[in-house]
Amino acid sequence: MSALLSAITDKSTIHSVHCAIMRGGTSKAIVFAAADLPADPRSRDQLILAAFGSPDPRQIDGLGGADPLTSKVAIVGRATRPDVDVDYCFGQVGIAAATVNYAVSCGNTAAAVALYAIHERLVRVADGPARVRIHCVNNGKQIVATVSTTNGLPTGNRDARVPVVPSPDAQVSLEFIDPAGGDTGHLLPSGVPQDEMRTTRGTAVRFSLVDCGNLYAIIPADTWGLSGSESPCELELVPGLRQEIEEIRESIAERQLQDADRTPPATRRAARLKIAIVGSPQQDVSPTDATGARRAIDLVARIINPERVHKAFAVTGAMCLTAAASIPGTVVADLVRRPLTGGRGVFRIGHPSGVIASEIVHGFDSGRPTIHSIRIDRSARRIMDGNVFVSAGVLVP
Image (tube, rainbow, N blue to C red):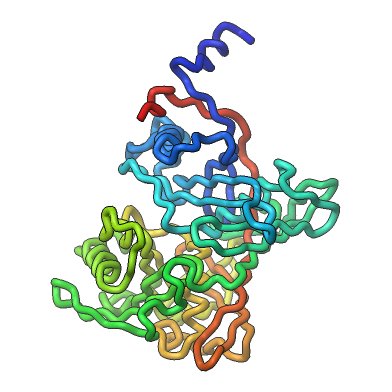
């Protein structure tokens, strides 16, 4: 080992951790093996923040890309349940804030985890479709990923295109098994398909609270005179919109969500809740796929996160909206032209970068809506493999 490399890896000043940078769908994540991270949660998060370069709006001193879509971490470990192959813990890494939010999950990143599990030989695969059973630690749910392989490795597929991703890669079909209620224990946490509230500005807000993949409050875009087809930049420039959305997020979290860990309760509950605004499909001016071809859609939607408006669309957001489309009386079911009936269907959502489609298997049990599974196709790629270096001082309690 050269003197320079010895100095870089001197454990007294520098901590080195193996990781991979991987794209899954429209997200990019740093993937760590659970065994390579500190067992102490506080030291683990300090290391993750240092690896990303947070807190810093530019994340200039780390691997983060200064955008919520690229400030994500996946921690992958050996299975702790007999019905899965790997454990997967997702964290949304704060950019300007020194936080790692484990209260949510990420379906796009799950596609990267499936590839990682194959690359790291955490699952046995043969030529042809390989199944990777993933335990999402964040919500206790199971994801079954199917990946085409050749000689034990994922196979690229020129047809596996995802909007905003410039090139095709390995196709990953994600099937979310019994996805409802991972956060609250209920598909409809409030017990009804629609709720109402009024903001301090006097805005009357109708919303559907749906827990499927993640927890979402779904609000008609015309609440603010919007169509739901606006670009992220346009939405971020609407006066007072972001502030009012955050008020709605906090109000719903405080009134309607419970939190086992109440330190601090309001902050943790709000961190669990996503917000999507939706509009009828005839208002979308550019429902195109990655090739520029126009595609039929059932709904237009935008996700408004605390830091930014989502530039694409979350897999878990598509799951929630698809589930809502199958439930009579939700704001989604009220907007769509063709409600999801008959126990199985495909739902297409127009978003800022194209179209995301999901296939749902659903029904009713004693009159209550149930979601058996939701399948969404993504693609994934391993971008980089190596070590990230951080100051050993960040691990000191």
